[in-house]
Length: 203
Image (cartoon, rainbow, N blue to C red; front, side):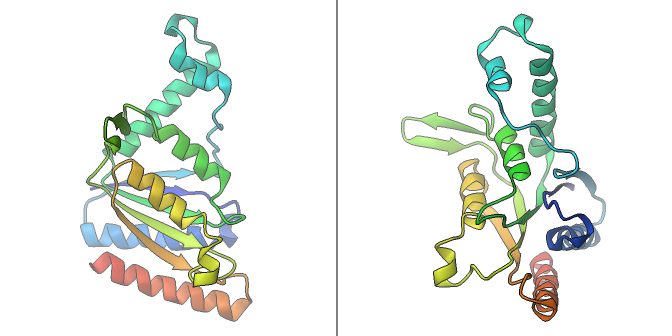
């Protein structure tokens, strides 16, 4: 069993998603026995956002690539290889300004590649990466699972959409909400999320 574990919170030890994603990976390792875990701290070791120069490598003969294009192509191939090889993904994804951290978006931009992880057909786009289970550990300062809050949720819906676009339909959320509403609210959210982890891993 190969697990790809990504954290994207910039809050280090104060991060709710880091605490919960680690607990989830530990539970998965206990449940599945022998596992290999590849871990990326996307906030500490940021993946450079795509630029014109990086993208330009796709339209330039390799003999004419710059040093940056060579190094970033190697990085992209490594990230794609890890993504392809993993059977389970655990993604720590806090909500920042109604969406996801830009560090996580930078990773998504490296693995959402036409012809590799999806393709266009006469009947529309088709995802090429199925058969994986993705656990999204989601944290929000407020409450966005309500009908009113859902209208401002561009975090969980985006992740479910982009993963579905790549062919991944088994996307499971562990959510901690209202973590910025005081110590009691944060503790209750963490306890509920821990219970959700126990349930979801046992399924």
